[in-house]
Length: 94
Image (cartoon, rainbow, N blue to C red; front, side, top):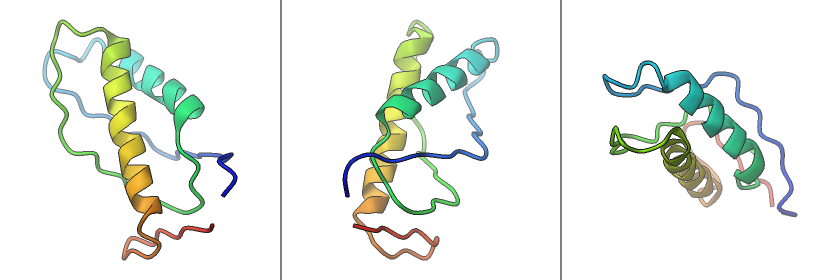
C-alpha cells in the first residue's frame, strides 16, 4: 500500500451527550475535516464503524473533542486494515 488513499463517508452519525447540542454540528464538521487530512490509507469497505464511548468534558474546545473522536476513528480503521477478512465485509488490499 502506498499510503495514499481516499475516504468516502456516506453517513456520519455523531451522538454527543446532553449539553453538547449547540456544539454538535461544529464538532462533526471539524472531525470530518481532520479525517480528510489524517485518515490512514485503507482499501476496503467499512459498512459501519462504532468507536464506542469517549469521555468528553464540557470545558474542552470543539477542536480537542474532534481530535479525540478522529483518533478513535483512525484506530478503528487501522484495526480493520490489520484484519483482512471480517464478517462485516471489510477487505484489505496490499
